[in-house]
Image 1: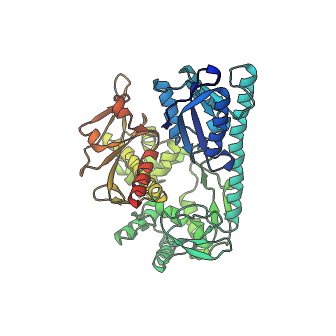
Image 2 (image 1 turned 60 degrees about the vertical axis):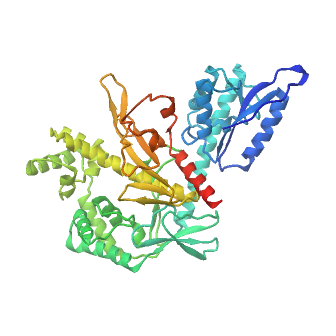
Image 3 (image 1 turned 45 degrees about the vertical axis):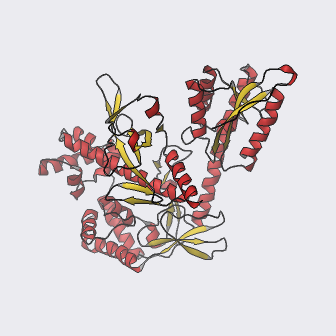
Length: 520
């Protein structure tokens, strides 16, 4: 937010009304550039006798959700805390305030400002936001139109992606073991192989999958041949590769799940399959049914024989035949009778039992499946299961941060020994997950785990919601500020709470600033 001093006097002796302006621009329309919005708001302010004393901006931000919009978040925080020194907020139009898919959400944020004594005005709309019936009806229509625009745009983008898939172009990031992403221009001429976390920079460029290093191709073919000829399970083949120190395309040890993903990847026989899962309009990530998948056949150079691949799918079909809930629980109960105890590793190692991940997706968690067959695992087992999931989430956050750092021009490395991220060889960052504990009186608390060694420059705590399934927010603070702070509460005082953010964007912005200053 930028604040400017006001020295103007109102025409005709009228008191100047102190106002703020809110600007938002995504990448959808040049018409909505922040400069154009500022010009329109300035003209409106001159007519109305407003003095613009503060500016809140969200440049390059989607209007679908409040998350990821630090400008609007700061505006709401200033208004509701009473620190705002203005009476009104001028916005270009309703769509700049947001394209929320639930129009009540848009209304809720405006209502919060009104309750704090700050009104919202839209300078480019053909109605006065004065609370009259006509104004409210037109505003509701405009909110619906703004939401519908996003839905229509999403559908257009989806259709464009479908067209590119059917033309043989790649939509996605990781290529897979034995494959590489090749950047080509609009004429199809090769421009170079993209490494991990590298992306195309020109809109007219495209990406195609090509065969990778011979050693990786040999590993992929060996996996398929071995699976078909020996009938070893996915877990057994994964263990064989781990013994040989052969890693996945992500540089990690093999698991049953990563082996299954490779054996079902149609890229290896020249097919491109897309839309297995999707996240529409900033919503939840969902797995799509096979009839919604987009498949283009024979568009890539195959590296696995189709007959061998088909045999592998036939074997997998017998292994992964659809089981009812009762059949899955019966298999788990039979395994318990044989082993006397259960754990995720025991379940994954049993060839006649579905993997633990399938129990998790079917019943919510494997611990819930245990309860349904009357098995009470040790308390430590429950913690191990949850901690394993949270560690996977933490590692995913680290990888996402590294990709974001590189995208904004910063150089980032992750040291597995010290468990620290290092930005531009200068700033070290430690990331931890804080499980939510609810006290007997119903108050949430989080253990900070800020005693990281070696001590980082910045400490990030991912605070979970009760149940440890979703993220509440992120504490991003200098490590020295929370040294000795063992426990966090919902209210930790103004200073510490100022380090709480809904996303990791402030850390990315810091990396970008460090990169720019280093270049200067």
